[in-house]
Image (cartoon, rainbow, N blue to C red; front, side, top):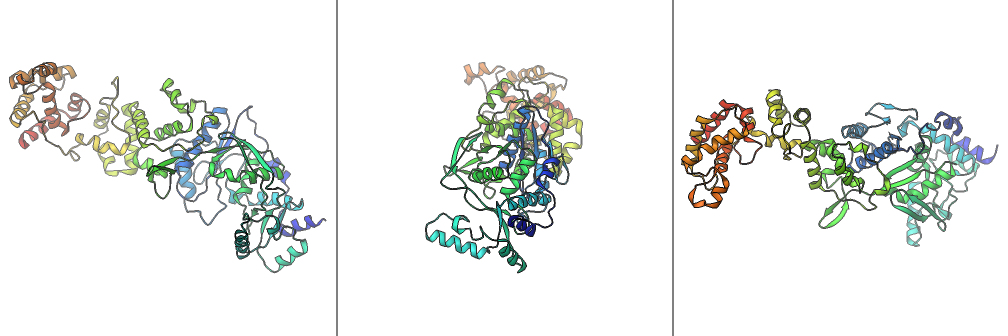
Length: 551
């Protein structure tokens, strides 16, 4: 047995499988030519971040566009930062926003697929098997340096203005012998296992980033940690093993990982693996006092995807907006395909921005208004009640007390409208928007238009009660208002009033505003004729009498 083989048995005596065992356990995927296998691999350290949702969308649409596979993997090697319920928060968030998961974690507790387990803390034996092979080949070794020793090295390097890190002559245990390691282990000294890097900073690593193009960086020469003292791998090592065994073709992730690419390429090559394609997604930015910065968990509520759910943004509206960020030609495609699913869009990583796109809430609102305006009343009812049930129980009770009434209310200026109104952008606006339909939410404002005095308003409302017929269509309804104009000194036609304003007190539109204020307490609403039909004659007259009494 060679010294390296003895070292491997000393460090990992319980590992008796070989890498070939796992290569056979996870065979190549049977997919069509060009199909891409991609993943999102979050850490369960908090809520689902907008950046993670964006990266998941880019991965998902890449898989969809190529007939490939999108899977989720939980990277929980840093147990100190993990929070209870972290996996549920992330996976539930992806599911809520319609990011369909082919493989991996499909809920907080359930996973599916033939390449699992999809949680790194459950894959320790796999990583240790590959580390043992590296040790046998003399490409990895134990390091017994304490935190204090590493800090001392860093201080010495900084004082000498030398690049910091565990490399070259600073790699204290790089050439440790079996006997030295055995002695330290017998003394109970903790250790990590490091890669014995064969790289040189003088050499260059050149790779083609699928988004950013050609990137050239110094080769890695640092003996970085593969396994921590608890036997759990670092992100770098786990990523290489997992993406190889799960047959990931494209590693699409945030561009904060670009600096680690030399380490990752070195790992893939050292392990004898095919290097996947890399694509680094620029972060979503925000303007702060005129300067761009990454959207922040600490500063920006919209950094948490739950914010959009709580506000009542439609999941597809958020995804549709993110697609406009993801691809420069998506909006042109959408204009040509207004009713198609975004999933039909042929996505190309090369169309992504190489710099961070600004988060634009105004644009998101516009996208969301368009999305909601295309919904029929039945769909709106399902969506709005589902949102209210989760986030506004009082409003939920009001909406569901009489479903037929609520659905009739939601159908106004929607189901039969050639151009539906675009008043709602998110469901938390609905309570105020529809408040006048519900007596326990109705708070009228009886402020009259400046050209209408109280006496005329009262006279009109009293007369109108005598002519209103709920069976009238919109034209017949408005003709009744016009029929009362001349007796009150108002013009039937707006153009007549504009041509000779001194001859009239106002026009029929002014009187319809008075009626609108009486029935809804507002000056701007959907079609008033339809509103009155939904409310019913008795309720409308009750409100008209209430306004007469108050003015």
